Amino acid sequence: MDDSQHTGDRLSFWTFLRLFFRSFFLQGSFSERYRQNMGFAFCMEPVGWKLWTEPEEKRRFIRRHMDDYNGNPFMSPLVLGAVTRLEEQLKHGEGIGEDDIVRFKRAIGPATGAIGDRYFWGAVRPFSLVCGMFASYYIGIWGVVVFLVVFNLHNLLLRWYWLKKGYHHGTGVVVELKNHRLSREIEVLESAGAVILSFLASTLMVGIGRDSAVLSAATLFVFTGCLVYLKHIRRKT
Amino acid sequence: MEWMLAVPFVAGIVAMDTTSGPQLMVSEPFVSCSIVGFFFGQPEAGLLLGIFFQLIHLGHKPLGAVRFYDGNMAAVIAAGSLFGGAHAFGMDAVDLRASMIPVIVYSILVAIVGRKLTTWVRQLNSSRSDRMYAMMKSDPHAVYGWHVKGICISFCRGFVMAFILVPPGMLAVASVILAPAGVRTVLAANVPLLWGLMFAVAAMPYWNKGKRRFLATGFLGGAAWTIASILVTG
Image (cartoon, rainbow over all chains, first blue to last red):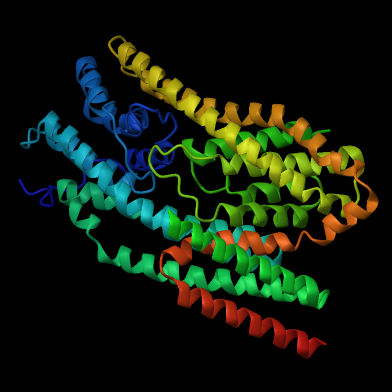
């Protein structure tokens, strides 16, 4: 059965919401050996207790999700939503087995790591930080709020969007991982971040010249020298 | 002396937010140092210190299970040491600026300690996971409590780290008072040179991603803007 041809939402909005909030604590018990396994089981718990009523069914459910798992924490709702759909299909005998769920998790986790890490850690976070630091130059401590708002708008909206996408598409969610809009947005955020950071850098370093032109020149010299040195080290390694 | 509990509490939140959750980025040095500065009535100084540390860690990526130097804890403990030391030893603005260099050096040691502790907590969580798996046979509902304990362990790690490491940091900061007044003045006056180092470190990730043209554009634009505003205002 095509995962997108579902017979309507079966999960209640409250269970969905609990899944959403628990996803923020996926890495609560991050371990050396099993990575995010306990966190994944913790996030899925509300879904499991809705679907499975017998103690042995609950044990099997938790055991499935205590398997080792590692993925990007911000993209985890995509996987959680898809796995929720698969659990429903398993419950209703729609051709999904327990091993299918475990295999799906093992395959998709690293994929979200590759994309999500580049997007959130490589683009959104630095961009939000340089926006906040740039804003703080003009509006002081409120720059911190700018950073938190810019980052968490991405964080919260995308988490919710991906949770719904995952739930609606099930295993078809791999299409979302090939979303070229993310790649384009990464390029834009990296370019904008570079411009804002260097604008702030020169504003600060040249601005020192208001008090001392010598100190400003020395700071620019240190900046250029360090940049050349770091580039040299990178070329050597 | 409420700050003696407030700083470890903030450090606990930072340790938790760094990995365990909710990862809303309040653990970033830019935020945490501002909060610590706010407790001491110096939010702008905290903000400046936060920007210093943030520029060093701008390209930091805690990917997967990589063992990283704990820059977030280093920053918040450094902030607690700097402002706590200034408060306890009655340091003036010049001494505070001069203390930037010892506090940055101290933060490197804290980052190394933080990395070791992060590894230890992860190993602890591995054995906890094994025990929880065994317990599931009797109680499938156990996962909630065990996971929440894991989150609390992260908080406690940060709290205890700050409780133990802030006092020696305060002594390291206060050691600046022992230097001659001339040395302190020179150190304080040359703190802006650190901007050059910090911005170079922050720019490298963008340089490595091939964003040189964008870096150059922003740099020239900022310089032109600043020079123009200096000339206009006089």
